[in-house]
Length: 488
Image (cartoon, rainbow, N blue to C red; front, side, top):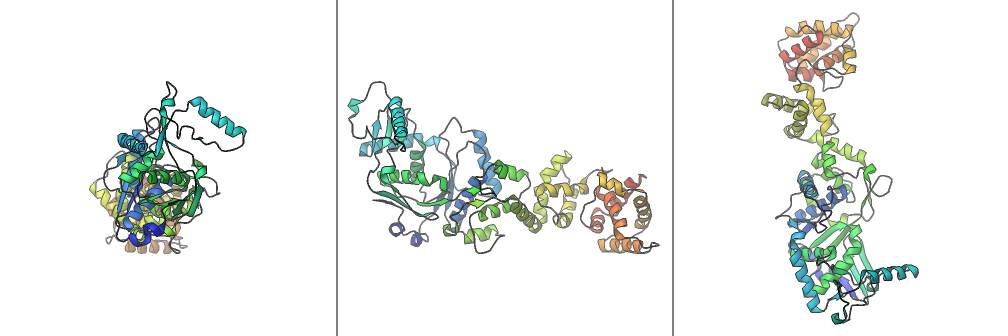
């Protein structure tokens, strides 16, 4: 029996306090950084930070036909936006090809690998026979013990691992528990192709060893790979890292995650207005729990994170829950931070930079603005009226409020406001209420406040109008009222 990662052998729990924990995130640069990959990176990052260890980044770019520089940049940008800073320089797997070949030569010299001269036709015949017999196809090992002198001419060999044929390979996984497979179900896999390029299976093992990875935390779609990779570790006499295979993320209907569920790149969520803090919190709770805690700060996540709290069932992505959580984070965020977050969006929309006075105004206004926003784009849109050039453009609903009655109230209030000396929100509110109560009959406050809101914001939605007037200042308020009245 081959036993992989036995806790009793490596004393996992006891050694964590003394060993340097090293985790890695190893994406393939063939597309955007998707949600599942982002969660895997987060779990690796948190585990390393919890134990004061290192979180490394490896770009698995050996598939040259599908790997792109744009995808690499998307991975970097996505991780940086999420705040998942990695230690040391990122490693390109492709740049280590010579090291991978060196390990293959070592395995050959040790007798733990061999050259296979099977032709494509022979391999096809093996598959056809397996299919006809109703069994899974496996390479039959026909070159396992043959002399290379028997090789047919003109055939470039692959190199295969001489895998154990008897017993079992057992993995003690920190999420899946004990998982085992009979070794006769694992054939002699290819380590190096006939063109001299190493396979993914070999490259991963060599890189994990050379990077001193102590814990491999990844999706459970890699669980079957773990058995094969463990055999390479053992063949080289290398220490095998601990494994933790995380269940995948499903849509709210329980089906495999797809674009219709929100399986977009991390950059898409950023563009939709989600805060990185909210995204980290949401990804953390996709398959991991700490009691009944839902809103978990990054500092708490680092303190509390453990592999044992990862569930074994697939997590379900819930866009509404993410949106709700994002709103909570916006409301609790620092006002100046939020202004800096929405600033690029506003400047792009205005096609003009914000000046210092406008930025200061937005910071003062932010406490009222953020109470209603669910995302950053919505927040930027709602803040725009504070810095929009005059005269404002009005929504259709706002124009409807600027009817004859609305303009009558504006005209009367404009004259009274011009004489108002104490320009503070509570004094403004008192004055408007007194004006409404003095009507014959008394006027409902909304009949006065809503035309004011339309004139000052161009919309029917804003923070409390008394606060808006105080923030805009007396001169700007009167000017906007004049615009609405058509007297400016």
